[in-house]
Image (cartoon, rainbow, N blue to C red; front, top):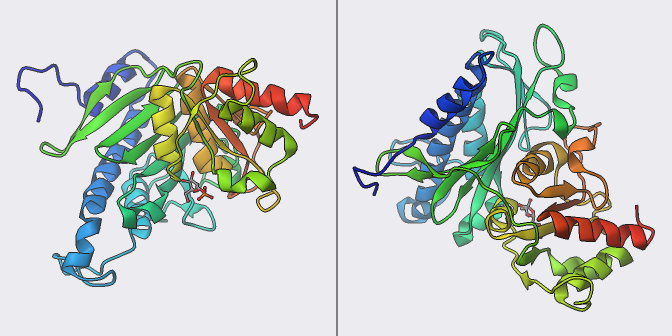
Length: 339
Ligand code: P6P
C-alpha cells in the first residue's frame, strides 16, 4: 500500500515530466509509452490469475467472463497488438509470436513509430510460478509514407528511441529508457498504477553474479569455456569468481543483474550456431537498457547495438551486464582468436 503522504510519481507523470524537457516533443512517444504500460497492466492481471485456471477449469475452459481461456503468450501478444494498432502512433509492429511484420489495419491511421516486442518471454516458467517478462523496442520509421514495412523494422539497435521490459515477478515492474537513463516503476495493484520506485538505475561496473546455462558447456567454443571458468574463480589473478544465478528467463536474469551487478550470457554453441536469443526484440532492447544504465552488451566481441539485422527473427549470441565483466569476456575471446 502507498502511504497517503508519500511522494507518489506515476509513470504517466514521470513520462510527461521527461517530455517537458524537450520543447520539440510532440507527446506521441509519451502516449506510446502509456499504451504499453496499459497493456502491461492487463497482461499482469492475467498472469496473476494464471494459477487459478487449474482451479477454475483446465486451459481451454471458459473464464468467469465466459471467454475462451487462451494461452497466456497468445493473450499477451494480442493485448499488446490491440493496444498499439489503432492509436495512429505506429506504422508497423513485429512480435516474437508473429512470423511476419504486423501491419496497422486498413481502417486505422498510420503513425511514425515502429514497435517490436516479445510479449511473454520465458512463458514456460509460468506453470512453475517463475518470473516472466515482456520486452519492447521502439524506433522511428525510416520510410516516409504509407504503411510501415520490413525496412522500418530491420534497424540496428543504436537507432532505438526507447526500449524497456516488464517483469512479472514477486511484484510487477516496468523498466524503460528513452536514452536519458533508466527508470523503474512498480505496479501497485491496489490502485492500478505504475509508481516510480527506481528514479535512475545504474548497474555496478563489476558484477556479483554470472548467469549462463552451464549444461551447454561442452558445446561452447574454447574461448567461451575459458571465460566462464574465469567466473568460476579458476583464475582469481585475472578475475574474481562470482555466484551463479540462472532462472532461465531472460528478463528475470537480466533484471537481477542490472540492479545487483552481474553478467548474463547466452553464447553460440554447436547446436545454436547463432545463439538462441533474438536480436530485434530481445537482445537490442536489453542492450539499450544495459548501456543506458552504464553496462554493455555484445555478441561476444561486437556491440549488440551496432549489428544491422537482415531478418526479422534472426538470433545472436548475447553477453550483457556489468561493463568490466562484458569486457573481460571480449578480451578473453580475442586472446583465444575468437573475434
Ligand atoms: P535455456 C526463455 O525460453 C528464453 O527465451 C529466455 O527467456 C531465457 O534466457 C532462455 O530462453 C533460456 O534458455 O536454453 O537456458 O532454457
